[in-house]
Length: 177
Image (cartoon, rainbow, N blue to C red):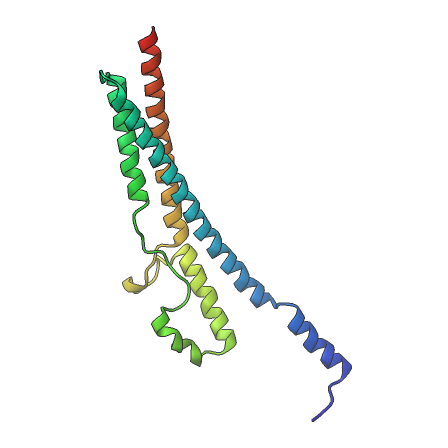
């Protein structure tokens, strides 16, 4: 065995202690992917809350003995919000980075560097999609775009629910006048 020089030992120690730029890039991709997963969970929780509020609005509207036009309209808006909210919560096919579990053995033949590049590419496709892919089977809509749609639907639900609440309050005010 040959002895390592002090400089070689320090170089090896630096490589093992500090992550390379490639590792940092892959870690950032993982974090971005996790951010999108967290965004999805957050919006789905918020939509669930809106659906609960809408159910209360519909229940409160049903308590009125005379269903005035404002009450009927508020119940209709709440019902539309529930429909959009349930549409938003439907099961969707979200992209996962990496190969399907059945194809993991294909990674075995790749070098560490090639595996890192492939995983980085897979994270990018999972997050942003690859709608310009030549092969139709390879085209994917990114998780970010899917989450952006959910937030759009959530915003519509919030507006409908707010209008429904305003109509119920307006009906109560008119009733006292």
